[in-house]
Length: 343
Ligand SMILES: [Zn+2]
Image (cartoon, rainbow, N blue to C red):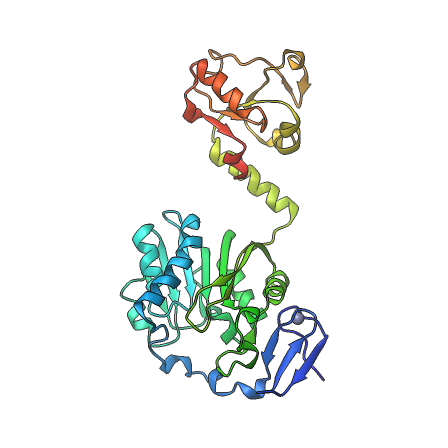
């Protein structure tokens, strides 16, 4: 009986015997080795005895790190906790810690962990399943997943270690971008991913994909890799609560809402009863006096609202409203747009 696809869990699979026994999913294109073909790489201490896992020329290493940091730098913020699964000798972590004040934990089974300990805050030589030190704001994994037999179970461990608002960045070789990957003789590589199979795996494991790109450089022979940025999928109520929490972080005390039109109705009004709005304000005099959720829409009064932050909810007129407020003496740093909440 043929196994189900480890990525999409589909049953439309077929067996091939060239060059090694492997399976192919006709649904998502995922290809994986039969268990009989992978015994030595799955022995308990196989990876533990290896070293120099990331030994490539400096120019190639710089190209790889630059490619990764291009995507990762916008995700970094001071104080965040990062976990890199398969950190090798810790070069990526070393570069990230040079540009942001983060707590960086690496998992590395091989002896390269001893080098990584020089740069990173914590290094574990046990797999993610054994790690209890969560949750993390950001989990990174570059060219690790293709080495792991049960990729679905592995992603379960990653999701357990990720904060509900956290992000996962995972990269694997791209089957479509490697002329020989279908015949990959590297016995460590159990899985060959397609864009569809990586998407399906992440979806089945409870993640939502925010970005999926190809063409990422790992080395001269794996020069086209797939990279996904994903977050944990949450239900509608949880996402609503996260949005309200964002409002309360941005506006801890009273604030004024300016622009009571369509954007307000769509993106703010459904939450209004749970926000600490001081007033609803609009430029249009025909709206003044209209009642809404216990408020009465009014004109902006710079004396009455002195010192209160202002959320401008009109996407179309935000530039004009912001300019008018500044003309009335409102400091620009107290004027916010919807991007402060949704951005
Ligand atoms: Zn599949």
